Amino acid sequence: MIRIAVFPGSFDPITMGHVDIVNRGLKIFDRIIIGIGNNAEKKYMFPLEKREAWLKKTFNHEARVEVKTYNGLTVDFCKKMNSAFILRGLRNAADFEFEKAIAHMNSGIAPEIESIFVLSELKYGALSSSIIRDIIRNGGNASQFLPDAVQPDTL
Ligand code: ADP
Image 1 (cartoon, rainbow, N blue to C red):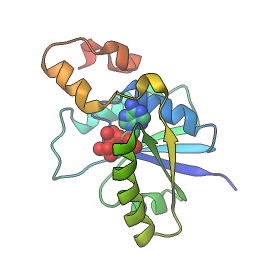
Image 2 (cartoon, rainbow, N blue to C red):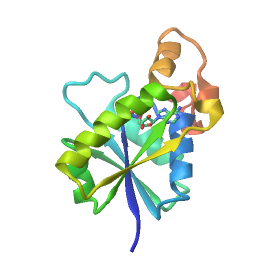
Image 3 (cartoon, rainbow, N blue to C red):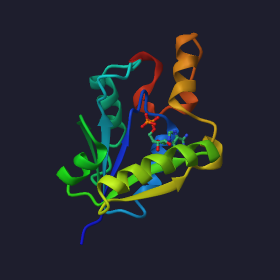
Image 4 (tube, rainbow, N blue to C red):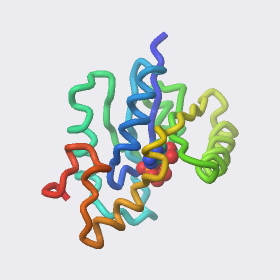
């Protein structure tokens, strides 16, 4: 049986932390579908098309990674993709508490889908898209934390 995981997130923008989680996930799963959740209530810094293009460019060399966008519940997207797993990254205890609540709710509504957590590499443990957005908004250079596809001229 092929193991397919969905890695859901906003990726606003994708960071080296996300890349690290996908690379670790590829050791566990045969295929990873990166799902960019499109939530009408949420305000994003970067348009969906840009976030999607950055992800696609970052993983275009990796045939086992696909990038898709979705609306609605992550578990419904998993079912549509024939994925029995949700992959999420953990940086710290706050992430754990947050992710635990989501995973419990998800297993309540879709018990057949398992959430799998992968710890971030130590050097990416303090990295988040929100800090990157702050750096960019204030004119700083965040390129060391971003994959090549998201360099300053693409922002
Ligand atoms: P969301 O809005 O769903 O939290 P994000 O794009 O912020 O979406 O994050 C998607 C996933 O990537 C989450 O599981 C998050 O914990 C994980 N993640 C984000 N940054 C890092 C990082 N630096 N190291 C490990 N995991 C990370």
